[in-house]
Length: 158
Image (cartoon, rainbow, N blue to C red; front, side, top):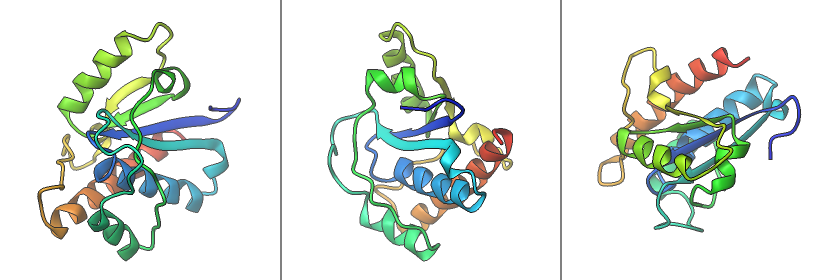
């Protein structure tokens, strides 16, 4: 997937319809605005298979649109290949982290660095909570956390 000289990041949450597609879209826009999108392979995925093929949550899409960002992502589940092809797998909470670490153990050549996206937050909010059962404000909070974390992550990798 990642070509020589490129870097890659996979954003992961439970269902791949709320948090991770927001993080993917935010990071893609930042990389594009910084003129480095061609140096990155960017995607998002789920630890579960509940929403495979579905579009992101309408509230998440509305939140992104409000900030001038579009997403045409279709939900997918993390695959064994992801652990071998992505440099970074950035997840949203401890549950995602333990599930990803469990899956990575089943992959012989797993080389991806699995981290909490929140570990890059300058405001030290480690966990990006699932807004699915929440309000528009909860989606906005996820967006703001993703902006802070992705800004720091991109800075560290440029």
